[in-house]
Amino acid sequence: MEYSELIKERFSCRALSDKEIPHNVMGRIFEAARLAPTAVNKQPFKVWALQSPEARAKLAETTKFTFGAGLFLVVGGKPDEAWVRQYDERNFADVDAAIVATQIMLAIHNEGLGSTWVGHFDAPKLKEFFPEMADYDLIAVFPVGYPTEKGVPSPRHEVRKGLAEIVTVL
Image 1 (cartoon, helix red, strand yellow):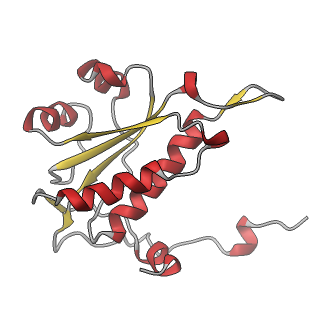
Image 2 (tube, helix red, strand yellow; image 1 turned 90 degrees about the vertical axis):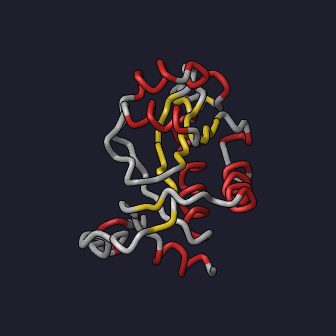
């Protein structure tokens, strides 16, 4: 799909099927994450795929926003591995993780799947359930699945600020 078409068509899908997703499709989504640009190419991120019934049950204890999906991707940035801007000590782990998450979100849509960026989750509880996440700032959970007939864009999807409101040329 052409990029401008992809970014116009992608929407937050909140009605998903738990039908199994082929490994080659997931491989392309993971490859999009791997190729994401990060500050100084430090790649201070991790993606966890929660697919087993046990892992999904634990995730469901941290958020109600699961939308029927059978697979969840959790994205986190690791501050200890990230580039830090010298002038103000700004750590870019969360920025890098957000870039990765955005590429994942677009790759999911490009594969004909649906998802939405879930930020409303109990990160401390998720880290308690999955200790391998402990050293990361968890920034996103993506429920992933095939959109159901109820998986349509929100009425707010088309509401956007005008360019003059978001761009200033100096």
